[in-house]
Amino acid sequence: MKKNPYILRAFSSLSRIKLLRCLKDKEKNVGELIKTCGLSQSAVSQHLKKLKNWGLVSCYKQGKKVYYKLDKKNAAEIAEKLLVFYKHL
Image (cartoon, rainbow, N blue to C red; front, side, top):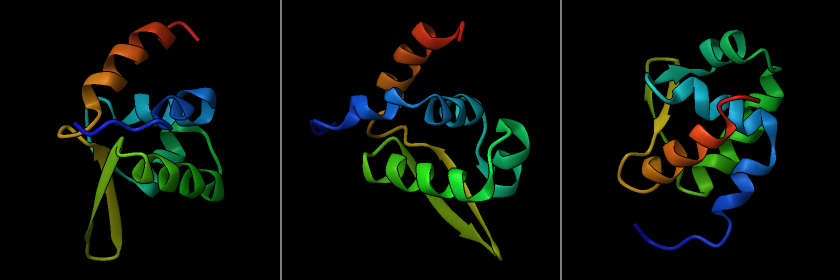
C-alpha cells in the first residue's frame, strides 16, 4: 500500500465514516448507499469521490449503476481498524 498523507481526512467526517461502515461487508451502488446511510445523493457522490481519490474505495459500472466497495488492495486494513474505533458513534 502506498503512503497517503490525506488518508486520515476520510475519518474527519461522520458522513464518510457512515459510508465506509456501509461498505465494510458488501459492495453497494449509490442508491443503496443513500438508503442505508441516510445521506442525500449529492453528499454520497461528493464523499465517494474523495474516498476514491484517497484510495479507500474502488468502483465499477454495471449497466447504469456504479458499485462501490472498500479497496482491499490499498486501504481496507486501515479503514477496518479505524472503524473499530468509530464503532460506537
